[in-house]
Length: 430
Ligand SMILES: [Mn+2]
Image 1 (cartoon, helix red, strand yellow):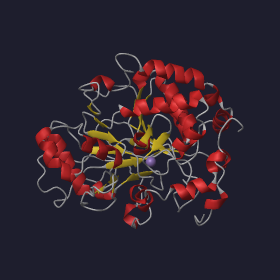
Image 2 (cartoon, helix red, strand yellow):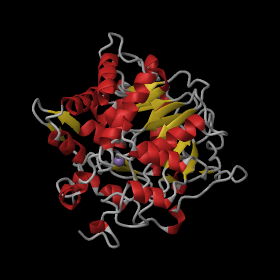
Image 3 (cartoon, helix red, strand yellow):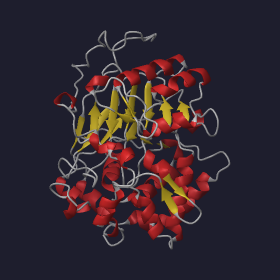
Image 4 (spheres, protein in one colour):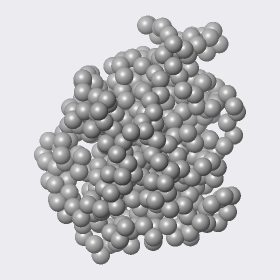
């Protein structure tokens, strides 16, 4: 793959050094999938076995009007029949990089339009800078949710093949919500970014990009790209390529796009969408009074908060942006949001790179949360499990938890596109 800047990005020193500067905010990402008790194994739900109704201990005092059974979990769908050789060829052909000038120009034009780019759900912003959008009508065309990609061009192309051309599930009208974290963790960060730019430019009304913590952390100080998160290899890649005006401009456009990208979406059926979480409990009293969903602390929690799989409550820790929440914290948020006119009953998010690449947390059965990430490989900061993973995406279903689709990419293809780095094999030692 001569056109792809991979070998340099895979230098072993990047992986080990980058993990150290900010351990408190990012190492929690792995700790979530390490100590799970057996009861937290992801499960494949079936329609005839809905989650148990809320027990009396779960929500003793919730003032919900339309209390009923929680939104159901739908069966997980296995996708095995994509055209894998064609996907492999597509990625190796390097076309995305070859189209960079056109893509960057088009994106530049779109972002400088007076009325904004008019992307999916932008019409529901209460003001041009509203980043916690109350969506009045989700629309009818299929709506897919794609979690963390971290440079996973293979998972992205597989997802696009599914949502557009699959004989059973594909549609030319398909719309996409990206849950952020498009780059960092090596892989094909620039290609993923440019590919998503291409999708936006082709039809902005079909694409919504919710900012993740890695996207939000990227900045430019006038000379250099910077990042406040670790790993931050994408900003290092951009700096290494500062002689290339097109790559530099792509990075700057990404920053511009993410600055004003939504941090949260509230759907009318109670689905809440964000990269990480929701305003944690120490913000609730103030939020109740002000109703200001766009306060900097609320916006930060949407992007950075992490799900604890089993805890009832977690004390917000404001010394780290990645503070955790428990299932009663989410129930409290659902209650608060509903009292502020935003019904929240369930959530879809990315952020935590769970080993199975999707997770329904049993402890959250009263208010289900789906975590979905589209990562086909074990990242260098993950230390357990197989190298090949099954990336997932999810399909919006009204009044239900979004339906999980597992993209069963053949192992050989994963290894061909992402050769396993020798230095992280077996035991994770560097
Ligand atoms: Mn992530």
